Image 1 (cartoon, helix red, strand yellow):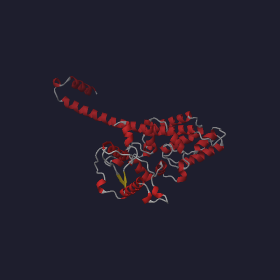
Image 2: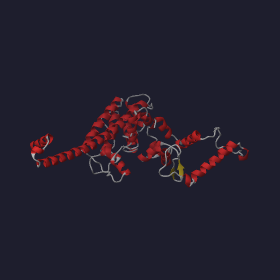
Image 3: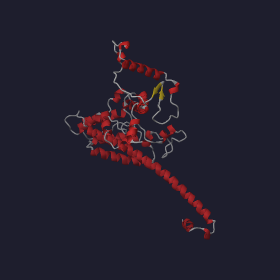
Image 4: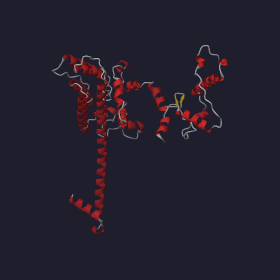
Length: 369
């Protein structure tokens, strides 16, 4: 299947278009298409009997379509094992409505509405007023022009879809949801960052140092760097401590940072590492940098900050995966070692002249060990 064909298949109403295309390709009849203005019957001075034939047919088809959606004929409901394209119709029932095109998007729209922000608001569990203080434009710009492989991982961070045991357990309850590293707590999205094991703490320190380095490259003021780093560190240690004001420094800047710090805490502990930052961080950065226009919106700086936070989250998750895979590899190596010892012990019972050269070498190593 070519990429162009796949693109056509995932477009809206692709199954209906394929049905029409298949009919036109094999039909002996010559079909002529004419453009008809839709929903003319909604106009006040419209008279059905005086309308042209194509307009009346269009209105009749609209009524038939509505009747089909409310009570579709049982003979047209697709079975559990539909055939292949091009002569089939795919469908999904969603609370009495038959969805035939762009199924995945229709399900999301049904639950969350037509904006992605609503989905994120539900995951953050914040109010509409708190949603207004998030820098959505910065998130969009930070996500644009990323390499495809980075887009996938960053989107998993945004929507908390990083692969983990609890996500696997939600799909298959026969799998344990316990964290492989500590084996005490279900491995939720937060636990990936807050696991109390020693390796995760080391990974946090390295990732946090990388975050500070990236923020310095973005020419972020040291007071802003320290505040963001403290929020990230508090999330890792599952703390909710207030902003610790430095002893020296401009009082106005420190107070402004403290206020933005509290705003960031209110929108959720995991919001920051997912790239949802308060837009007033820009105002504080301009104030600390001594810019005349405090309201100036430097989206380039905001993009770098959000990407730095995504990098921190990705590094923490990669460290988790390396630790899990190494532990599994260690178990495998230990099992192979035990099997080797068993084979050697069995070989010791066989007369030496009947052993192969490799078996003799293994026995020699075993005896020396």
